[in-house]
Image (cartoon, rainbow over all chains, first blue to last red; front, side, top):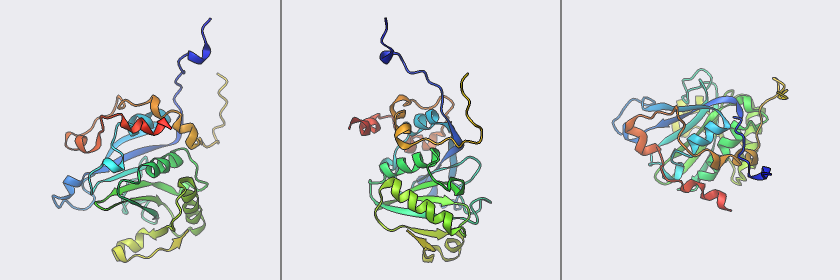
Length: 189
Length: 55
């Protein structure tokens, strides 16, 4: 008789709680002085564990993306822009990494989001990795920046999932719009 | 047929559970189309990303 351990796994797709869209901002388009945000475009929308891996395994991870690239994973129908009605009152937590050192944390951030590991997962819009010449940054965007309890919970859990030891800060999109790089952290964990 | 998932239950998956499927789905999704101008920037044809599963 056949050994069941050698039988191929039956692939029942595992549905995710939400559908998610990968977005890519193309650094070469940016250099053409296109209006901000005009070069960002949706790449792929997935709603199962299997679709996630098919896509994730087919694309460059942050360490292989060209400096200037922004790669986003946002809930379906939420655009990774301040102007998006769901994002507009929100903000973001940000972690900074040395060049080429963000791949694992980017993956773990995605897995925590799509696997609904955050107690306040409803507050999350999505995540972005910004690849730059000297460093990489990962941010989680949330909906209601003024809801301190939810934001602090998300920030704490995120650090825990990634075993990230540095202090991280939360910036309101509103402050970033007005003050650009002068925006101060409203919360830190 | 014995799938009696409560519709109110959030579909939660731990990292370890999700990682079990990492190397079973490595082909570009069938319905995936990418604009030519960014395919080189974004797509990796190398399977080296699976090396993380070797430990």
